[in-house]
Amino acid sequence: MASEVVDATAAKPRGGRFCTVCNDRRPALKRPKTLEQICKECFYAVFEDEIHRVIVDNHLFKPGERIAIGASGGKDSTVLAYVLSELNIRHGYGLDLFLLSIDEGITGYRDDSLETVKRNEIQYGLPLKVVSYKELYGWTMDEIVKLIGLKNNCTFCGVFRRQALDRGAALLKVDKLVTGHNADDIAETVLLNILRGDIARLSRCTSITTGEDGPIPRCKPFKYTYEKEIVMYAYFKRLDYFSTECIYSPNAYRGFAREFIKDLERIRPRAILDIIKSGEDFRISTSTKMPEQGNCERCGYISSQKWCKACVLLEGLNRGLPKLGIGRTRGLNNESNKDMKETNGTKGLQSKQCGTLDF
Image (cartoon, rainbow, N blue to C red; front, side, top):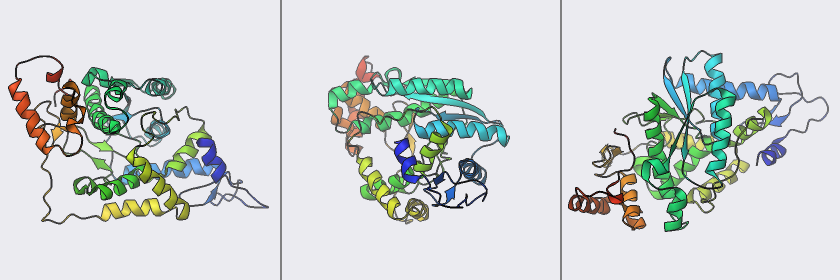
């Protein structure tokens, strides 16, 4: 993918054309975000400076904070770890940085990408913590897919992963968690929430910091950074990252939104930022009833229901009813609590909570 992006966007200088930023060196690429012909050195500088401005303007960090970087070994998290390490030193943020990886238990995918993260740990000098689905939930994604097939498997993985990141961050005792979600990801999420009619998520999906009312806030320093530019930065910097897509997500719903965003970008590169701006300007009517955040009665994790989504999904798996938590779960949530009370005091798989940490 990296070579395709670079080949497609590489500049072809003719005559005396020079970099539009420094007007000194020959351009090496055309920025997907601005369509400027730019040299590598200036690209590195503007790429890093834009991220620094986002961090400073949005007051993402405070000196002395412990920050966990969600690290998958992919391009986004690898570039995030590298750039954040560089900016932390260059601008004196005063942060203690850590790498946090989640092992979903996907043979031939996650085991290989974790090897990349372990190399990043050495390359960037950042401590690494790995938390696995198996130790938190008693299941691997390989086992879940074997039980439910390839339909709805992303629902399980997404719910478990979000909670696993929070639990891993709690183990590291960090103040914030940063993720490599880029501008393309956020634009896709805006479209998905519109298509799903998910007002609650639509109202917060463009926020650069989320979860401030939860255990550990999450930040997205790449909120305005294009995916293509992240790939180009990793390519030209020769960063060590894992580029294989998850073997269980070829037909993920998000993939259709991603293709639509790419089509829009080809026609009008600024479309990605315009979609994000639309999400930022979205306002909910005061008469709209929003879910009230509370805590899961079973594991203590933040939830708008009696049981969090992870506990409902896990209960279904442990009872041999994997579809129990798919779709709307208000009724199922109440049913699950009733079943739980009836089996109170028993031990075994169906009494296992979704995780091993208290919140």
